[in-house]
Length: 493
Image (cartoon, rainbow, N blue to C red; front, side, top):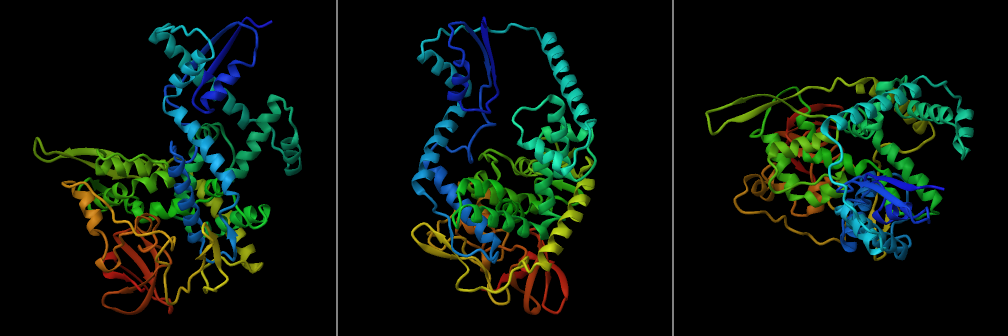
């Protein structure tokens, strides 16, 4: 018989699930628990605690992901699949998110309601003991990482067979993890890589890759995933699964915020135009940014703090070099340095992999670049309306992400310089400034790769190849390419 039950809850599972775990042993013995004050790990969606808010953001994110794929040759996708099930999912999700806000207190209140007597233990260990515990934890983690890296290599068949097993030994789990890491990163596995993967490194460098050197492969990747989900759903898709597996909207948000403008060698100040531009758009569209990037932006955040939060999604941080200026009005000077953490080796492996996939897709006749718009390239949306999935890149550009959403002006707080600049179109040519929040953040109506534009002082239509929000590379149909200021460009609508 057990004499006690011990539980450590870090905010991964719902507070009700934590209490259920403690109740697995029916005997009336002591329960010893530790719970995190807040449960940020296990939130669902963007952490919304309102059903309407969560569903609205899921719908907008789904439409953004599909629209950004444009002509992926997927016709009549039903995105309003089983609305009653989706609403039930939202009801459960907001309950879980609400419990995450005050995670520890929610667990304690639930236990008290069940009839348990709560005894606060207070501080039971000294700082020196905490340090010893921390060192032991780190040593065990390092030992496990080394054991995974030293595990025997599996063949593809052995890996598939091991995946199907329910009961596995520790050595088998280590072998399975090592093979999965090799598939994920495409490079030899060592203990350092295992530790970085445990810290969420893969999501950071994957976003960095698709935002920069791997941008041309993103559409094919997301189209294939959407195709697979559509086939499994027999023409319908489950919105939460779609949004979780797609990266297009996240990359589009980062591009149109101008984050690429920060990834340039040199000094950076909070007063720089690129930093002010990023801050202005971010503050004006923080709800959509929360939905797409899961980043919380506060009114009190400084422009540099906002820039650092966005770069944190890439695992990058601007380094402070010095402070300059007179006393009382000093400002910090930062510098971007390309991270020397091994990601370049991973990027090289991913490029080889993605180039082979792209070549195979082109050989098979799969569309990997925008082509003509057809009346059949439509996506079903709530209300049985149709959203065009493709565009004729020679003549028009998509200017709305969802045709049935009414335009909403960006509201700003008076006296906030960079909020006012966002509302007034500070960073854009006035002819292409948009008052629609979705156009502003998802990049529809703004400059982005593939946009068809007119350029001041140059004849004809040009396609945007690359854009930082400050400068852009444009090319014409004859192969001529130019680097110009974004202020000289106008969408050819």
